[in-house]
Image (cartoon, rainbow, N blue to C red; front, side, top):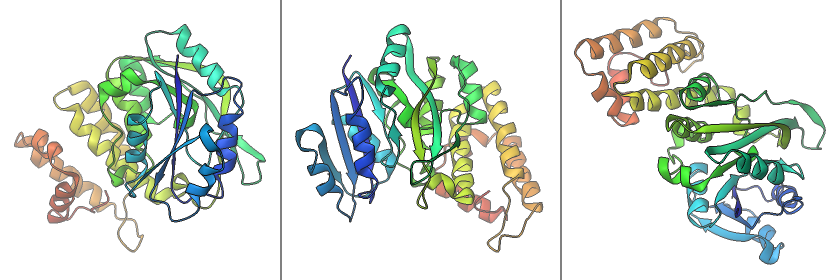
Length: 306
């Protein structure tokens, strides 16, 4: 099996060396390592050049992490790929463990392990979360409730499955949850997700972590659910499952520009949805571009970030 590691990077010249060192220190070395520089304005190019032929460099105009992963996927040849964030660290046996898990489960779309959280100095703070295992609709339903895969850096995914579901979503409204979107789309195919119990990745906490920005991440989670409500189409089971989760997330995330709670907006959103569904317009609404849906919400007095 040919293994490719893709590292999207944006202004992480200070953190990138330890990340690349962790890749090159694998007990099962990767067959290729590619850094996709997403329009950095720092010394990212020089950092990568230090590694010579061991690490390839590709630059693109700033387009976000989803677009950078797609570009890296297109410019590598591996049968299986690992997409490592430029601030995270692989533990030495990560690729060996994941490759063995895929070999043991030939029908699996991907294999994934666990992660632990470390601070900037490398001290372990806590495990991130326990991973789940499942197949098809079972794993899709679990994933719809939460992204139980700690990071794309602890996932080895087969190229054939990635090509089946299409590129990583470049929409900036999904920045930070585009990996969750990809796992949901893969689960829709009915594929198996193979879990390994080992901790394979260290997730570095620092001031620029997107996932540390709670209000922005919650808004992006809502955008993710909007997208997958549209994808659910006329599937009553998936639609009902997503709708219940979406409403629950919104009950915890209703605000106005001043930050004051606005419970009445929940009622307005439900009234709008009821109107659309009563007129059999819901499928059309869900196919509208997200920006147009925001305008409709504003017209009905619904918070544009709800």
